[in-house]
Length: 177
Image (cartoon, rainbow, N blue to C red; front, top):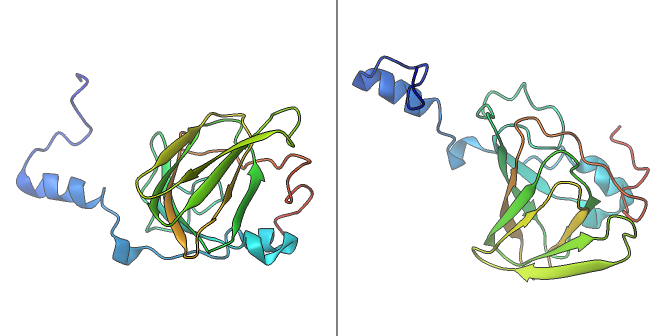
């Protein structure tokens, strides 16, 4: 099989439509999951946010039972809705890079020093801005705007490990149960 071949050798129009249909996730078939990161609200209401999954489960837990999610091959893709003033707490993905692409609102992204999480650098992103955070670098998010921020989250692994929360994170010691 050459590099352009696929497992779908039948190239009939109906086979191609079937292939394409298996690769489409529509906005109408998505839902905002406010519960998957609900455990973080134990540290405060400002940590409440919704994940909207498209490809794979992301790094929020096991959502394999959700048949609306397209299977992940090499990355995960979701949207995140972060209410005005809300925070995505400091966390680290050790196994994969993560990218944030802003669709609506304003998002402040902060990277934290690996050894001393109190040293930070921040950038404010708006419509169609993107940041890529390398694996192993702690990061946090804050909606600095007056409306919800909606942004894409892409993680560079089909099954990313759950993130860890450094001692400087409000989530340090908070459990998922």
